[in-house]
Figure 1 (tube, helix red, strand yellow):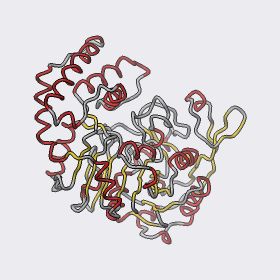
Figure 2 (spheres, helix red, strand yellow; figure 1 turned 90 degrees about the vertical axis):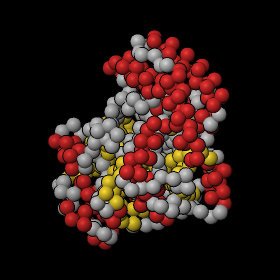
Figure 3 (cartoon, helix red, strand yellow; figure 1 turned 60 degrees about the vertical axis):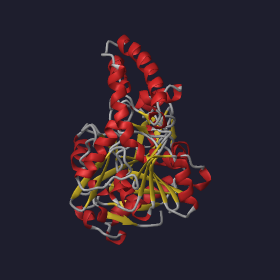
Length: 427
C-alpha cells in the first residue's frame, strides 16, 4: 500500500467511509486531507454502525494513527462532540490515536452565521450548503484572515486575531440583518477548546513524512467526491476544497513523488445531493426505487439524494484528473432485481458526441446522455463472497466500466458490512 489515496469518484456518498475502514486494516496511518464536518462517513462493523464527520475512518482500529490534515477546516465543538460520541460507543480517541495539524484552519461561530445568512440572501440561487461554516472558513483562509490551530495555542495571538475578526465579521453580519457576536463569549469558549485540543496537535507534514520513510503504510482519506472539487466540479455547486488526488499534497503536506496509488470509490449508479446539473438523473419510479433500496439519505443532513443511472463519462473524467490506479464499485447489490439497467457512455452536445464533462453548466445542461442497456441480475449477489459467485450479467456490467474508463476494478462491495467486500484484483 505505502502512500495510497481513497477518493470519491462521483458527487460524494459513494461509500468512502466503508472502504477506508476496510483498507485501513493494512494501513498504519489514516489521513483526512480536506473538507470539514460537512462530510459524513458511515462505517458498519458486524452489528454496529458508526457515523464519522471529521475523524478519519481508521479510528475504529486501536493500532492506527489517525490524522486531521492542514487542508481540513476544524470546528472544535463538532470535533469534541464526535470524540465524545465515539468514546460513548466504546471507541477510544487518544492523543496516541489522533493527531491534528497545527496549520488547520478553525471554523469560528461567525463562519456558521455568515454561511446561513449568505445562503439565505442568494434566494432561489442558493448553492445548498450544509450551513456548517465550511465555505466562509476557506474564504478567510484564502483572504489570509483565518485563525489556525497553532494560533489557539498562543492566547495573545488568538486574542488579537479574534478581536479583529469579530469586529470585521459583525459589520458584515449586521449588513445581512443577523445577530452579532460578543467577543468575550467567543474568546472564552475557544480558550476552553484550546486546553482540550492541545495534546492532539502536531506538525503532521513532518509526522507523515517520517512514517512513509519508515516504510509505514499511509492511507489518505478523501471527503465528498470528484464533481464537488472546487476546480473540477460542477461549479458553483461544489465544496470549497480540492477533493481530487492533487489535494493530498497541499492538504497533508506531502510531495507527489511519495504517492504510490489512488483508488476511486464509485457507486454502481449515480447520486448527488442539492442543486446542480445531473445528466442521468431519474425523476420517476426508478429513481425512487434506487433511493429507497439504496437508503440514499444524507448522513449529516438526512436530505434525500437525487438518483440516476451510472455515468461512465464522470468516472472516466475522475480517473484522468486524479490518475486513478483502480476503482472500487459499491452498492452493486442495490441494482439487483432490476430487469434492465442503463449506463451512460457519452453525451450528445451541439450535434456531436463527447466523452468528457464540460466546465460550463450551461453547456452541461444541453448534454443529452447516450445509454447502453444491460440485462439485470437477481438478489443473490448480496450473498456472494467471491467474484466467481457473481451473476454473469453483473460481471458484464463491471467489465464495461473497466473498458470504458481504461481503469481496472479492484474491489466490489455487495453490502454495507466489512464481510460484504470482495477483492477481484490488486488495488
